[in-house]
Every structure is written in C-alpha cells, then in structure tokens.
Image 1 (tube, rainbow, N blue to C red):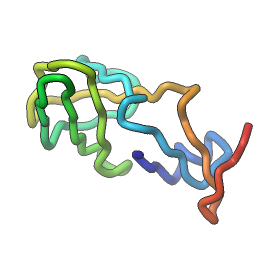
Image 2 (image 1 turned 90 degrees about the horizontal axis):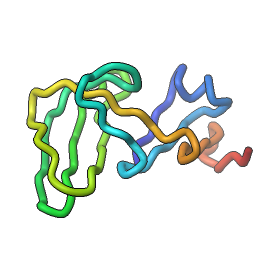
Image 3 (image 1 turned 120 degrees about the horizontal axis):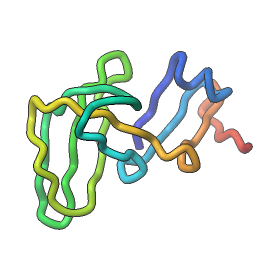
Image 4 (image 1 turned 135 degrees about the vertical axis):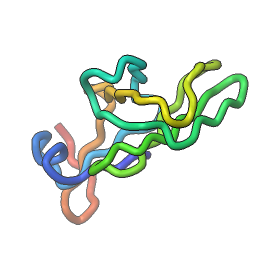
Length: 97
C-alpha cells in the first residue's frame, strides 16, 4: 500500500491516507492527480508495475493489468480512486467514514 501524509491526508481528515497500487489510475499525459516521474517500470506480461518518484509524496507504486508501454524517465500522473482511499489517524488506526 502507498502511504501519503501531509496536506493531502489532512484534506481528507486523516493523518495518513493509503492507496493500493491497483487503485491508482495511470495518466500518460501527466495532468491532474499526483505528478511524478517513473523511476522503474517492471513489465511482467500480465501486469506492469510502475515505481514513480512523486516528489514530496515519495516513491509510489502503481499496478496496471497488462502491458503498458511506459519506461523509466517518463512523466505520469497517478489518480487515486476516491472510493478506495483508506484513512488513518496519527496512531495508525483506520478511520471509518
């Protein structure tokens, strides 16, 4: 799971938010969402994992089902599925809506 703290988490009423790699939509155009640069693209045939340097958010992992023709150095935007964002308090306990 990707964990994000700071202003993005506070905007959702949490100390930390968590998003699983499969719940991040990968936008090739790099507009909207969380901006970053691909550090590693792991092409596994059935899945593609992208390890994205998202600056102040840290390194994020995104999973795409199937082959995706993106490579290290490409700029992307990661858009979390709002229904799949997990929220945690400062003690690490899950927050319910």
